Image (cartoon, rainbow, N blue to C red):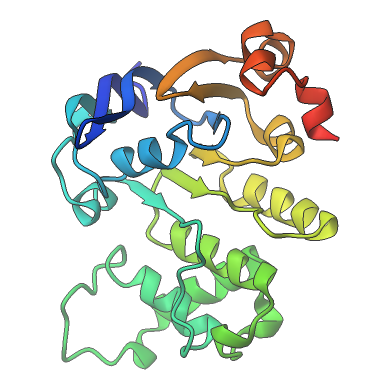
Length: 253
């Protein structure tokens, strides 16, 4: 079966600095895959290569078997991959409902229809209302997004991410800066909205990683040193050494 995402000898240099050094990675359809590693390992760079923000220095990236290297982010998005950002990326001056409706426009066929009044599009409104309930923000429908709590804004961003109907979802540090209770709620939300989809997640919270991921890839100095189930990664001597000699159990705590 064709993989959801496949990386072959992927490389990225910034000037003379080699950041990603020959990464090979296969992520299957409907798999929940986490990418972890110490600070400076190249996780965000790899994330940005897959989503088209950065161009490749070398290698190949395929989405559902199609080579997407060199495509722009919006072109990759229209082929079924959607992403969130480390820094919350929403329309702060629009309501929660309006944010979700904007996220739905292209996938529901409205595109550049300047003469269409979106308030009159019942199908669009119904789908936005469904998303509101799915991300647990139904009671915040008409709230200006900029005044939501941080955790609510992150939930809204995930709602926008899934609004386009992509079957590959990439989340960049979705629980960063959250309390324990907010993190637990976010994990439940991620599980719910990515059911049946392919999830790729960069995350520092080991508790979240081991709770969500089917497989984990460990990136160190631009190279993947381990890619396996959470149980295998947790027990790996190479991975423990990469985390400065501390066990993953200690990092989790």
